[in-house]
Amino acid sequence: MVELISVRQWDFFLRHGYLIVESVLSVQRLQVLRETLEQRYELEGAMAGSEGADIQGVRRLCNLIGKGRALEQLAVEPIALEVARRAIGEDMRWQAMNFHDPIPGDQRPHQAIHADRSFFPDCKAYLNVVWAIDAMTEQNGATRLVPGSQKKPHPRDIVADAREPVAGEIYAVCPAGTAIFLHGDTWHGGRANYSTASRRVIHLGYSCRNTAPQYEIADSLTPAIRRRLGVHCALIPDRLVL
Image 1: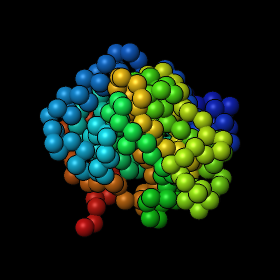
Image 2: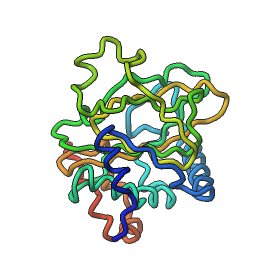
Image 3: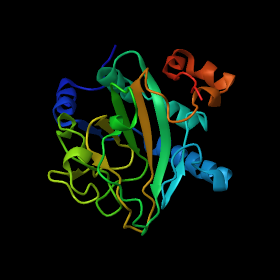
């Protein structure tokens, strides 16, 4: 099997807790994804993002795997599956797939620095793949992250004000089509968009199998989608127990 991540890239991920890989998605795929997201956002209207948390000042969609062929294909993008299997193990599952677009000029989307794995009880391993659907710049709110922080305690235990800049943080500036891989314990946070244009991303979470999904993924996937997914149906998490 051809490996899509080099030894140098994997070593970088293990050392720094993140990896930025540019030019994963072509111009054509990006255009289809943008059209799919915008059409879906218009279709869902006031219910857009209702499956997940309400984030003020953000255009949001949740539970995306079953909401369009382009999104379905992104959920099984080979490079993401490879990094997730290395980071989590062969028995990994989907945990969430959400669209996030901070409204230009709205300061509310600025997040406190955090680490994803801590939000999910019993989670032993987590990977967040941030797909840059538009270019990410310092002005439009490129994700902030702290290299090497996956080896530190959770920021809430040692950071006085997690919304303020944190020592050592950088911005994940990158062109559209980039995949940003974040270790589940890496400190990071979304930022407000101070530009005049969209800064759309898709967050795709993979986790160990004993981590509950953020919402009901299994029941959202039709028989037709499952047929297309084939062997990738192994990624579908168990149904939520209410």
